[in-house]
Length: 225
Image (cartoon, rainbow, N blue to C red):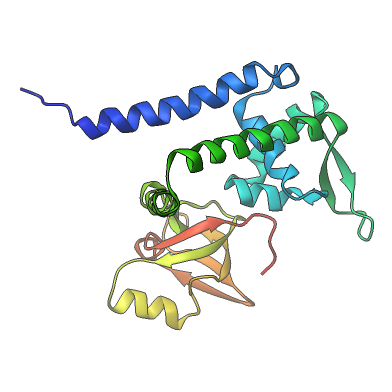
């Protein structure tokens, strides 16, 4: 007979409660009506900078592609919460800026998060609070689904986060300059899917698909190498 894990119940209720609390807060805020949660968090991420930002920066912060962000920005701009502006020194660069309406909503969202943190700190003592956030960070790293180089599309850039595996493959990749923190770009994939041609700094290298599957990356669209 199946015996449910009691921790599963606690975890489910915690996630459910956090989501419901935030959802209820924004349902009560008339200004947020008509916005999705994802759109609200785009506004919040942009508002954290306090100044106009290029789209690739916001896409990188949200860990989504720039094309996905563009689709979101189109909707948010139509609703009057942000606008596109030209960078003063280089008119070719388009930046995102919150409107007065967007600033008001961002202030509400920021205050919501401050209140949530205040609630946590009033419930836990200092040591418990520190441990709580250390465990949250550890769980975030463990739960996050990794993106590997072999899943990128030609033209996409990414920053290497880690290289898995041991032995000759890892050594060979590192000798070619494929190192954590390095930005690379997938240029093309052979007709049969193997090998892959990538640009690392100012030179090109070819690697096998199974080698690319060992390289965990973070999307880095809009970057230069």
